[in-house]
Amino acid sequence: MLTRLEVHGFKNLLELAIEFGPFTCIAGENGTGKSNVFDAIQFLSLLADKSMMEAVQEVRGVHGERHGDPRDLFWKGFPRGKYRMRFAAEMIVPLEIEDDFGRITKPTTSFLRYELEIGYQEPSGLDRFGRLTLLRESLRHIKKGTAQKHLRFPHSASQFRNEVITGHRSGAPFISTDRDTASGEPIVKVHQDGGSRGQPKPAAASRAPGTVVSTITSSDDPTILAARREMESWRRLALEPSALRSADRFIDPQVMDVDGSHLPAALYRVAHTERDKDPDRVYARVAGRLSDLTGVQIRELGVDQDEVRQLLTVQVRESDGMLLPARSLSEGTLRFLALCVLLEDPTVRGMLCMEEPENGIHPANLVPMVELVQDLAVDPRSAPGPDNPFRQVLINTHSPGIVQLVSPDDLLFADTALHRLEDGTTARALRLRPLSGTWRVSEGQRDYVTKADILPYLTTPPGAQITIESGAA
Image 1 (tube, rainbow, N blue to C red):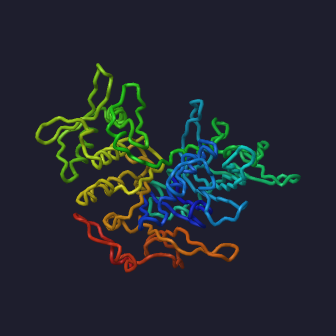
Image 2 (tube, rainbow, N blue to C red; image 1 turned 90 degrees about the horizontal axis):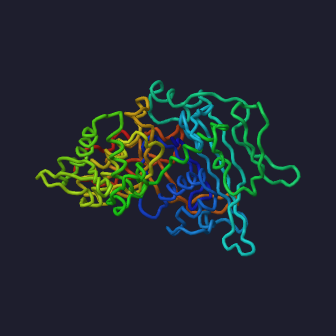
């Protein structure tokens, strides 16, 4: 679980700090840079598994395109030779992970703070784009005794906090960065989980193609590996109709991809797990969710096994008895179906980032859509487990209807504001502000919005039942 994110120098994110709960909705007009938060999270996730230049190629540039120029990810106001990106992520990591050799291990402690600073080296020779350079990387523990100050969202201490935050650490951090006394170059050191015992393993940062976290593959460094696994689990959903409509071969992966590929295989696997033992119960729950949508008349749902062609296909039976393949459903209904499958899959953990989940959904169906994305997130009043998977959801929207349906505690309002830089100049950057009276507003904090501020933005969506309380003024 990503509980706090700090970003500076990435696109239009300057000195931005965000506290996350299990469910967070970023709302605001298009063009403010809401999607840049998703890009920053995706970039960190990619850096945990790929080289820095490979990660660059998979993240949107400032114009929404993907290409290999790393300068496209930096804030455009940096002077030549002064490109810098800083990230910090506070996270609760899995209590049990598997290394690349199939061995199960556990981290020393599960609440961590990861910091990363990246620079840029100008191109030379045949190199046209230059490359990213690792300037600083650190990973340290957050003490269990201070966890309450870091987890400010409403939760159960006994059922949630004490269940997900375990272990202890004393001594050195797990990763640290020093300067070589002779060259001044950064040296990243990996410290053993045993603390001060054993010598740290140093590596020259400036020549590293990737982060230290991305190189940890075995259970020899279980806490760093747990941080890597957590960051790898931060996924950005981009459900594509063509992928959602595709059948699966028997040999295809049984985990749904971020574009919706392998939906039939994933649903078939989930329905046949030992937890339920009765596939029809899973199919009935998914069909029940779909029937909540206005205009969708689905009585039954299942996965057809074509033994001849060795294909799995989702089929639905409408109220009139007609049996149809799920690919005949509308794009919005297919996306809703994909989220229903994710809801049923207890193996889906980490953060799910969704942009504008209302796209393709009739306004009359905003209520079931909002309820579904909220149900995907862990309930912090109960202990995580198979019936309460430990995952969180981040969405962004420009829909007033979504804003009015979401709890005030879960809202952040996006706009841009002038930001004063170290040299005294100002620049316009993304600003995220909570609603007054919610847990995100600290004592003495003035950077928030009131109900009066957002009234011009709100309209009443059809079927809206949840409104912003008058007490949250």
